[in-house]
Image 1 (tube, rainbow, N blue to C red):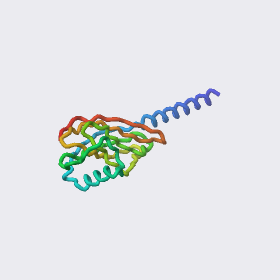
Image 2: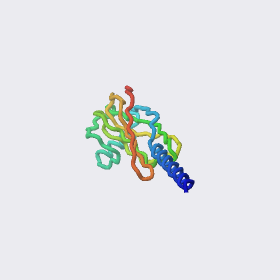
Image 3: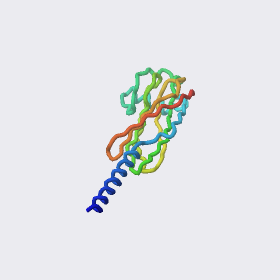
Image 4: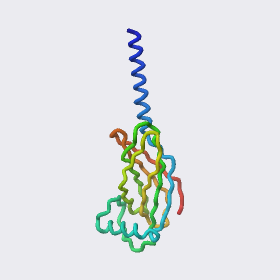
Length: 163
């Protein structure tokens, strides 16, 4: 009887350890965030499409504030490339990067992809924000994802960089 009780205790401890590992592994690591700035006049196609969609109220991204869009040389696109790592064995699905706006941000462009990271893997995702020219690239980002249908999120503050 003691042998059976000891075996059950070992099985329960192993199962609890596995569940604890799965929970620990559900936490995504943000390894690095890189910023690149492209003036709107160098990406006129994207700029014109974005402005048209905002004016027609068909914009699918996230609008932070209204703007007149008088001259394209007053705007830039800030693209944040985020290097992510899934340290667990369960896949992380429906990953979304949300840029928490500052006063210069107009809108975050929509991304059709809702990528996944397989277990024990890494990847890079990006988010693009239309902002006023000359603003700092210092941003806070929130990455939201799901593991086995449960939502998790992690935030990261970028170090200051000036364009």
